[in-house]
Image 1 (cartoon, rainbow, N blue to C red):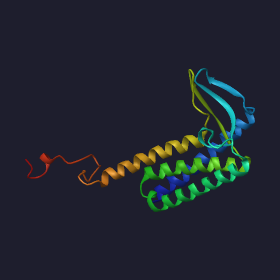
Image 2 (cartoon, rainbow, N blue to C red):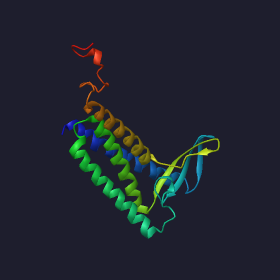
Image 3 (cartoon, rainbow, N blue to C red):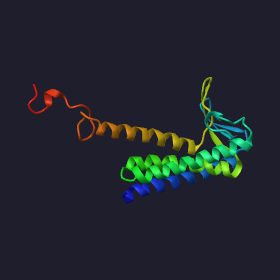
Image 4 (cartoon, rainbow, N blue to C red):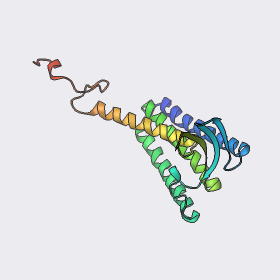
Length: 183
């Protein structure tokens, strides 16, 4: 495992965890719960929301005695799987290390919220006309971007390894007419 991969993974996870927790602390200090501050009217607000559920409020109405241990357990398990996946597959490729570091930092940020207060602080609130996206936070953004990068990296890797593709760069099938001795 290369040193660069460790720096990307652990460094990025630590930076994102710190930025996430700092942003949530500032929101908690500066914006009362359920209050909203328009930043770009009609498009973007800072809104202080405590989300006891997961994405889109999933399981938010479940009893806390079930919901909290469930989400804490799922988060801890996901972090363990992520760490072992990184140790086995991610350390040699910078993009994998970056994507896994983003996912890990975001997951740790939301896990800390759940451990500390039983809910995640969400505050980024986007809306256009009558369309409203559920509020989210920096950790959610890091996880989403990290998952997207990981999917892209895995797709690129399968393209590089697929039979009939060029061995360098995974640029696609080698045209029969371009092969030595072809028509």
